Amino acid sequence: MKTNKIASAFSTTVALTALVLSLASCQNNGDNIAKNPDKQKPEAQTVSQTKNQPKKQDSLAQFDQKKSDSLTDTAKALAGMNLDAKSSLAAIQKNSGWQSHQSFFENSWSKLDKQQLSKVKEWTSKELQDINTSSTTVFYPFSGPDFLYSYSLFPKAKQFVLAGLEPVGEVADLAKLSASQQDRKLQEARSALYAILQFSFFRTNAMKVDLEKQGVSTILNVFLARTNNRILDVQKIGLDADGNVKPFQKGMISGVKIAFAPQGESEARTLYYFSTDLSNDGMKKQPGFSKFAKKLENKVTYLKAASYLMYNDSFSEIRDFILANSSHVLQDDSGMPLKSFASSQWDLKFYGSYTQPISLFKGSYQADLKKVYQSNKSIKPLDFGIGYKFGVNESNLMLATTKKLARN
Image (tube, rainbow, N blue to C red; front, side, top):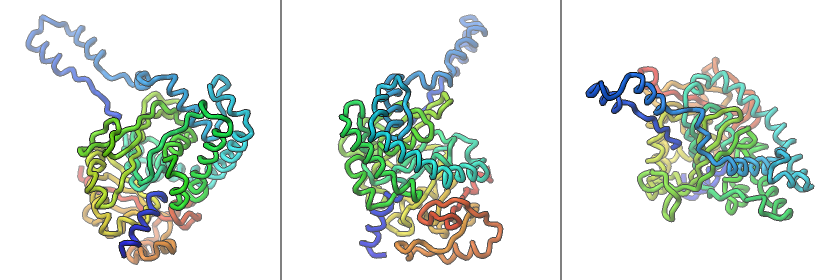
């Protein structure tokens, strides 16, 4: 593929596209008792151990309640969701602009849930049940701000790591804006979300316009609110050259870290988004992202509407990284070509149907994948659209499971 074609595909992709538990150890205490049994009775040791054990019920206590209320209410207002009368943003609900905004979201989300999300969740409960029983980390390169589908597919994941070219941006403080300014922010949110609500992926040209200034943070917060999550904290962060998360400074990979908790749960989860170039040249210039990602445990990689970038040698490093560091890969055909998955290393399961890529990517047709779909009569259909072929019974998914799991 020619350089300009790859660059065009790259531009198209990204758009279409830790919380570290500190476990206190009682080993030293036990050693001291063994050496000096008279200094501490067994009862005292038990009390000490109990004190040092992490308390799940305190997981949310570290977060500022007032700040969390403000973050969550702002996200709900942007998502067109009703606010409590005691909320500092309650008055926005009286504005005709917000009422129209709510009407748009109620109609769009109801349609999306009926045609897409409810079916995705049902499929997930059957086909990804084993994966979702563990504390998975979802690694989603070329994602843009698509937290929605990664969360729908992996609702039990403790960490989500998303990456794209789009800037991080920030969520506007609606309480400090005039009514006309609020209306403008609501319009920006609707415009940026239109494509994924209609087609299941973000479209590049619209993303360039909609997110160049506002970034992805607003969309991430809307998705968190609409999936019934409480937003606990939001931090602007950066990755240094060694992959360490630090307060953002110039020269670092920029990112955002959002702590959140599903409704009714008391344990915090984490969503990361990093704005970074995942081409070979980009990763060479800023190696911090791959070093950060390598530290993540129990990674499941998800790929959707990835513009077939990893079919090209200029994206070989991120492709090889995924294959070397993932326990599972769930992807449509725009992720990595079938030939990337060596039969000696991966077990593959296919879903849906495969015909050919959309015309923009017609050069990425896979004859070997077509043969799999033609010869394998046990492939289960998909009753929802996902990725570029978003029509019902037009989409495909492949679940790859490393054979290392079977050997272990």
